[in-house]
Length: 567
Image (cartoon, rainbow, N blue to C red):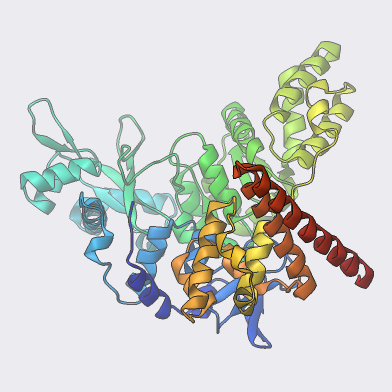
């Protein structure tokens, strides 16, 4: 795992302007000492997303998401923590320290691999524009691809033959091995290397950071497979990637429209007609991981499939994989195109305006799609209704959102006239999830962080409190040390725990007041005494702890009555 020196994290944060980072994704307006905007993490009509230029923190009063620059990239763009650090360091002109890289040199190998893939993409692009690329250029013209699309999406061409990579990179054995590791070469039976992609139009595939991690290639002449992807490598996992994600992410958020299609050319055709909002899996059935990424990006995506049997089967597989991820906040729709058509062909024949109208007119909600699919699978008559109820029961079992599950269950029962017994017991009385910050341990630590002066007035026993939540305990003990060292607690905790978004949320929550804090303190203190009592082996010691506990409990009950009387 990558570890960054604390002073390096501090330097990255000090050179990062959170307001500038967030303003690239949403419009912020001045509101007192802070800035406000529409939250990028959930749909809302009135701004509840607050950014503090002074604290370099953000917080949404609607959904509770909060943090600093690292958390924003992790929550908004799906970066890992090391990726977020390296991205912001690169923007700030800072070099990642060598001691932050693993002893095995994994990070260095990763950087070299991405550089080779980038160079290969540039080489394929040059070939497309040269004499060898004429047939590929003609093909792209026939498919209606403007030069701007070819340029912006860096479409290229891999010429025929097995030695193009050698001509580009030389024949050094180490480089050949690296090219094999990133999926551009394969080893033949004689132990030599040959090009994996030959006589194919090349589509670079990027990760969420915009780095080329692999390729899809479409053959120009006859042969199989028509589309060939890079093999699985440490850098390319096709079940986790979506074509068009890096290129279209911001437009999807801006337009609040996402269309999931089946292929590269569909994505490009949409962009060519003014709809840079398409994403596609990489030549295989869409995976749960890809659906999770889609729902994170937009909560109301439209899944677009051919209207033939294969298209409907693909849609049903997507719906089945979607169910465990669906929540009441999601509103996906399904659009079936006329048989034999795909977005590419329809856009060419109808144009963008007619296609947009088709989406609005024909895209059906996911629940309606599910019920229709169940009816088609089950057949007619009483036996068909029984099969439909049985299949509905099995599919509902996979849903995690108990409220959405109940709503769907009721609709399925109306459609079949049969009570779905299998899920009734588990969803009849769903327990509501506890709100964020409800846990007394978290509320206690949050109150200390908001009002650091409270730390100085804590009883000596508080130095020995133990919190069950390991992360909270680490923050708590660090805050105590900061108070003794006369440090800025907020800044110190934010830098020491850059991955913990709770710190930002605490600073934006309203304070609980002195009585509320004392009530929490006494509760944590009583739990501390309970732990001491269980560890005590002598009766006199246990009796003394009992006496202290009764005194604290009496004080706590008195405060509780006072709070209720004031409320």
